[in-house]
Structure formats: C-alpha cells, structure tokens
Amino acid sequence: MKPSVVGMVDAGFLTRSISGALQIPVGEVHVEGEELTSWFLVAANRMNNSLLRCYWYDGQYPEGAALRSRQRAELDKLEECAGIQLRLGHLQSLPFEHKEQLRAAASTAGIDYSNLMKHFNLETRYTQKGVDTLIVLDMLRFVQQGMTKRIVLVAGDRDLAEAVREIQNLGATIILAYPQGAPVAKELGNLADEKVVWSEDLLRRLISKRGDRIVDLIDKVRSETELLTAANEARD
Image 1 (cartoon, helix red, strand yellow):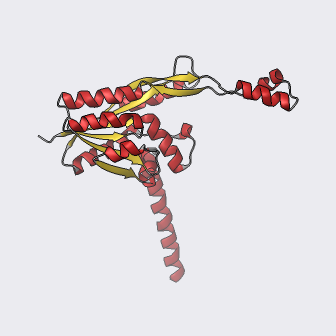
Image 2: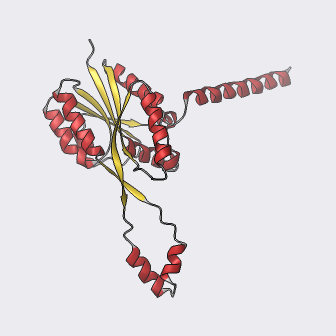
Image 3: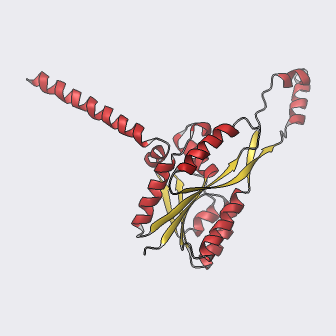
C-alpha cells in the first residue's frame, strides 16, 4: 500500500497570494475545489504516494457580516468536492484606529469632523483567528497518529515555522507549495524539505472551472480552423 500524502491549505494566504500574482481583487479569487484536489493528486502520484485528503483552513465571517452568506456558499461548494475537508477558524473585526488622526486633520483643514464622518465609508476589516492553531494541531496529530509522514503545506506564516521543525523532528517531511511571488516567511521557507512554486498558468487553472476552459479551447480550435480554411481557399 502506498504511503499517504496530506495537503494542508491556508485559504487566506492562498487567496491573497493569487490576488497579488494575477493582479485581481481578492474578492474575485474563487478557488475551484476540483482543480485543487487534481493538483494534489498529481503531486502525490509523482512522489509515488497516494493522497489521503486536502484540508482547507479558513476563517469564517461572524453572523451578521455582509460577506458571510457568500462565503458560506463558497465553502459549501468546496465541502462537496471529494477529497476536501474544511477546518474553520473565525474572522474577527478590527477596530478603526485612526479616529484621532482624522479628527486632527479635519480640524487643521477647517472641516467639521462629524460632517466628514457622515461621508466617510468605513469598511469593516477582519483578521483570522484560530486558523494557524488548527494547522499546527492537525500537523502534529496527523504525524503522531501515523496518518502520514509527508505533508504538502500551502502557507507562508512565520508562526508555523516552529511547528514545522517539530514535525520534522518526528520524522515527517514538509513540502512547501506557494504561488509565485507569495509572501512566504524566510524562516518557514528555509525549513521546508522541498519547495514548489506555483506558476501563473497553474493559478489561473485553480480559479477557473474546467468546463469553461474546455469551451474556451473549443472556441480557439474553431477559430484557428476557420483561419486555416480561409487561408487555403485564398491560395486556391
């Protein structure tokens, strides 16, 4: 029986990295579960291993947040994909920390602060909580319970470095995978037993539906065939 590989994906890191690499807004990055598991299956096969499953680590918006329902729909789609299991932390809203600076700037400019704030659209910002902890606990559990000796980690946070070191001390191998140009902490990158950089072409596949790509390919072939036919008719 082939040994198993486990995939572990920090969703926030992956989404932000794809956004930066492809120069598209974070809100327009939607990873297709089938494409993600396909990559992990191919990677495991190349290592002569089988894929146990891919774990998707994400922070969930709180109840009442504007983006919660849309995020939940996307998470449900991922959860329906064979080979993907969700591991969810939460997103915590951050307080706006620049009120005093705005008040001082308004006073200097002779602007009424209260009136200014009526026209100032403050978007709620969020930070992930509990996601790194879930990744660390799962890495230790998977290796200690003998589920795997090889983890493909898609992440870049420096806080994971010490956990990776401990996993390696237990005899496991860590393959670090990340998008081209992603902000991977030096400490984490230096510890990895192997690093795999995802190209822009791969990133575009990860966020596009396979059916759409097939349609695009058919259209391209049809267009090239029509051009070739027109060129042949012109020669005749």
